[in-house]
Amino acid sequence: MQPLTDLANKVFTAYYLSEHALTLEFGHEISESLLQKITSFNFLINQKPFTGFRTSVPAYGTISVFYDPIKVIQADDLQGIDCYEKVFNYLYQLTPDSDTQPNTPNNLITIPTCYGGVYGEDLDEVADLNNLSTDEVINLHSAAIYKVYMIGFVPGFAYLGGMSAQLATPRKPTPRKIIPAGSVGIAGMQTGIYPLATPGGWQLIGRTPLTLFDATRERPALLKAGDQVVFKPIDHHQFENYRH
Amino acid sequence: MMRIRIIKPGILSTIQDLGRNNYLSQAVPVSGAMDTLSARIANMAIGNNDNAAVIEFTYADAEFMTETDTLIAYAGDGAILQVGDLVIPAEKPVFIPAYTSVQLVNNPAGSRTYMAIGGGFDVPEVLGSRSTFITAKLGGFEGRNLQAGDTLSSAETLTSTTANIFYRLKGETITYPAWSIAHRMFMPADTKRIRVVPAHEFSWFHGLAIVNFLSEPYTLSMNSNRMGYHLDGEPITRIIKNELLSTAVTPGTIQVTGNGSMVLLMADCQTTGGYPRIAQVAAVDLPLCGQLKPGDTIYFEDISHQNAEMLYIEREHELQQLREAIQQKYL
Image (cartoon, rainbow over all chains, first blue to last red):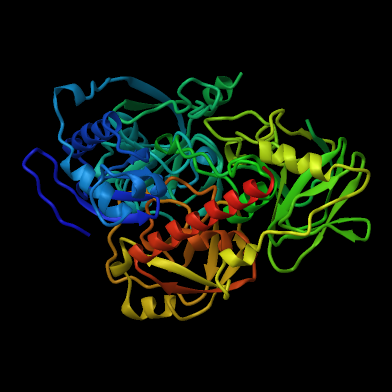
């Protein structure tokens, strides 16, 4: 780990993720200013890729940068004794300029959601753990305007920031083996939607009939980092009708 | 063009290549062969590109029939290929005449077998790869595992090496050369000792838990699949009990869940995760993990990240030399 500070609004430490990637760590909280910093720096990396760069994965407090180690080790323009150092040194000297400022779109996407019952089996538990009624959980969850902080976990899964602290609930101690597609969940201070039927450890409070990921769409994931999201409560009739 | 038909699909047979690396930011997993080394060796043996699509068979009990004269090679420890009583040797090119039925017979040494065909299997590229990711029904053969009756063709174009191997072996009967690839040369002597690099949250765990992690055996539970392996053994207890903010994980990452058990993430794993990570399996040893099966016991041994990277680069260098040697042989 190499602690670093930089005057140009670029403050990160870095750590080794694998032979193919390193992670830049910008902070440890969920905040819009951190999202802004990460979005800008991620844009910069993609505008000015190094030899061997494959892709980058922005998250709440981090950007992981994936590369081809053979191309990196052979790159004469990258300075360092191994791939990790070569990539790190390159990223450290990267500085934003006027050409590399992202234009941040401000889409507002409404997610119709049926809360509780078979659609959200942990609604009662989330209410109990937070000393709230189930209606209060639904009201708090659907009143907020969320921001998409990252896409991760499984295709199209959006991690949303902006949830009321009153709803914060720890993950399940043991992940469920399968969670239905469209499930809306809570984990710690995070809320999000499972796009596909997968295993997962989040507390489930509801489900949406929308398709969050479709490989045949031009952009397969419905949501992207920077989008705004609101949940609109629907009843189970509306949920079932949505699919027809 | 070469063509085969699946007679019996076996437990889980899918089309895989070396994975889908460019959609990680939309959280599309890498997928690809669980044992990339065996998949690459099967391809190399017949002069294909390393990334050509192969079939990943899980265990044995599968069967296919050639519908044309076919050039194949296979590698990996899940099964042995046989035609009747005739054992087809692994890790070398094999010519199989049209209308031959090939069975996969149990090999207790491992779990997965990779079969390459001259030119690679011709399935559409989805998001930059031919790998099957069943959870999202994308890639491979119609986004699913292979079923009886599926007909799989090879690509029209062959590399010059593949074409030369094919025309030299072509005949009336099953034919193969005397040489084969010394697959074991690329693997450590003790294939159950997995080298790992300490991960970012390594210091979140109790000292004794770390000692256990690096000395005690861990066993793959029944709850193990292409996404990851749940490991049974001494629980890993934590000193630092913070909730981690989700961040990128990658095949080979070992996470510790809330109850202190470990999950070794594999090819189809999620792109990000929120459980703290104790270690990252060295890339050169990840193919060994691809051959594990429930009930198998492994040990972990720590190495530095510099060492892991060096081992990776050395292996790639050796594989490159092997590729060139095969090309030289079939100029």
